[in-house]
Each structure stands twice: as structure tokens, then as C-alpha cells.
Length: 129
Length: 148
Image (cartoon, rainbow over all chains, first blue to last red; front, side, top):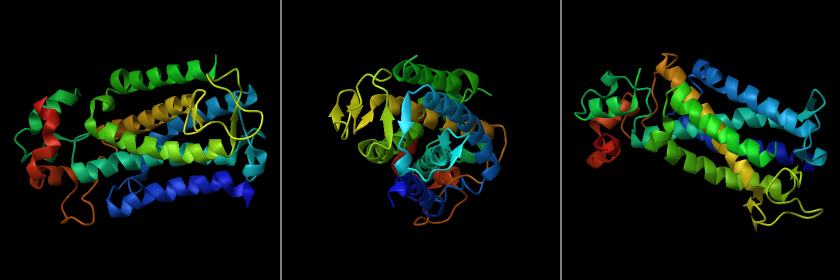
């Protein structure tokens, strides 16, 4: 079971954030095209960084606590999953806060907040399109 | 470059990306910082477990602290916070900011901008965060930003 340590933590992160999709109606997984576009660049950059850091010895990952599948024989599959699950959890967290609090994040249109008399100033304050 | 130097550089790069390149300016949004506080709590927890168990081990020359030859690193001290090198927090912040600012960027560009998030299932149905901010915001607590 030891070799599922890292995978188990990843599962915890996924389950611990994915419930927001249902309970808070974050609609992040449902908007999967936007999600994939958002994840592609961080995933690529951080995986390259990770591969480089492993090769140059900045850090190492315990082979006994990973399942043993590696990309290029270097980077454990758990690390690849990490760079999907963690950014996803960040986006779910962001949308969860918006779901509960209604605070603007910059992708609203003026019409979305039309009935609020202070909406135009909040839009002008944060957006330059 | 050490992990420390790269970590600092990556934080700066992610802020520059958010503010100047994508112009999403999430670092100026209260909602971003509240969500990051949640992410940070879970990073300290989950990454703390992984570094305590030494799933990750770090080169002594690449972090401010050091990696014990055997046994777990200290909970706090020697450059570590909740067992993890503080450099991991730099990486975590930049990963979170880059992903969320790109999420907002693509929404702004019109890629699945809607349906927007919310409301929570325990609240009366509406058409999402914006509608609720408009109609059912108790005491106007959600609009401090516009007063600034």
C-alpha cells in the first residue's frame, strides 16, 4: 500500500475540491473547454520545470511511495496528475468563493450585474478591455 | 539557479503575467486572495504530509534549509513550514495564480464565460453568481471593492 501514498494524496485533493462542483455549482468541470485552455500552459511549464529539477537533482521523489510509472523514465505519473489536479482545485476554489460571495473576478459583463447600481464603477475599476 | 531563486522568479513572473500580460489583475481581487487562502491551507496540509513522509526530498544546496539524512524534516524552522521547504509555497502560489488568471482570461475572451458559478445548492436557484450579487447580497457585503 505504501506505493499508493502519493496517489492517495492526489485523490484526496481531487475529491476534496470536486465536491464544490456539485455543492456550490461552480460549473468548472462543465466548462471543460475553458478549463483545458486554462490548464494547458501551467501544466506544460511546470512539468518541464519538474523534469529539469529531477534531472539536475534539485529534488527527488521516493520510488517506494509512487506506483512506478514514469514518463521518459524520469517523471512519475503522480507528478503529471499533480499538475492537473492542483490547478483544477485552485480554479474550483476561486469559483467556489464567487458562488458564495458574488465578488467580481473580472470576466463579468456589465449586463451580468445590471441591477446593482455600483456595478459600473466596480467594472471600471478592474477591467480594461 | 537554486530552487529558492527560481521560486522567487516564478512568483514575479506569474504576477507580471496576471497584471501586465493577461491583464486579468486577479491579485487586485478580494475573491482571488480568499480562494488562495483556502488553497494555501490545503497545500500546507497535503504537501506537509508528503514532505513529512519524505516522498519529496530536496537537495541541501538548492533550498534555504536542509534535508535531514534520515527521518522527517522539522515541522517549522530550517527554512520549512509544515515540513515543506518555504520554496514550495512560492511554487504553489505561482501555479495557483497562473491557472486562475488563465481561467479568467479565457472567460473574458468569451470561451464558456457562462454559465457562471453559483448559487450554492442550499440557496434559492438563480442564474449564477452575478444574479445573486445583484439580487440577494445581504447587506451589500460583496461590493466593498467598488467603494475603493
